[in-house]
Length: 218
Ligand code: AMP
Image 1 (cartoon, protein in one colour):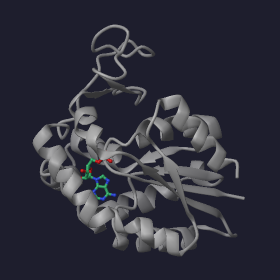
Image 2: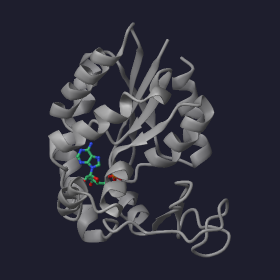
Image 3: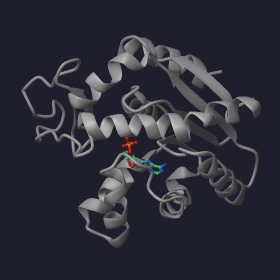
Image 4: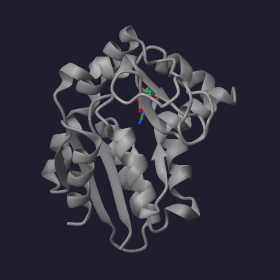
């Protein structure tokens, strides 16, 4: 059965690290709307220009723009067996759009799970301002909590690590406000549909990974 896995949780809760690992483990694509939008910005497309003005303020990019990008991506061939979706949906309106996309694409019933990373939010700003990632493989590092072996260089690809433009304290605070206002209500939305799986996201990468595998293999 096709597996549709979506991930919820506040900024820097560890979703990116775990969903990258999970997509490798399952052999499904890792689809992350933040990265898709940053790719549009790097290519300087019209969508990229619009997206940048919202991302820079820590706000959600307009629903139609993200819906178009995600609808196109989920209809690609590599998603036929399943996908790991990180960063979408981020509002009730987007959750309804995703239901429509899935019902248009799915020929038979799929296994849909919404996995919520439940975490103590005190440490998250510190995680954000120290975060770095590899532009080639997407591996996520943290100058304080998970440094690369050689400073600013990816352990796997040997290329220079990048810091996201929106990983500043000021924008991070706005992203938290947006999260609590727009995205947090999705926890209840999916709970009511009996597809919500809560994971304790406090602890080491390996501890959280084991908890995630328990849910995936249920
Ligand atoms: P992320 O990489 O998931 O932290 O996302 C970075 C930024 O991209 C967010 O702060 C939003 O401005 C934008 N973004 C990512 N995903 C979405 C989405 N599903 N809907 C609207 N905006 C998004």
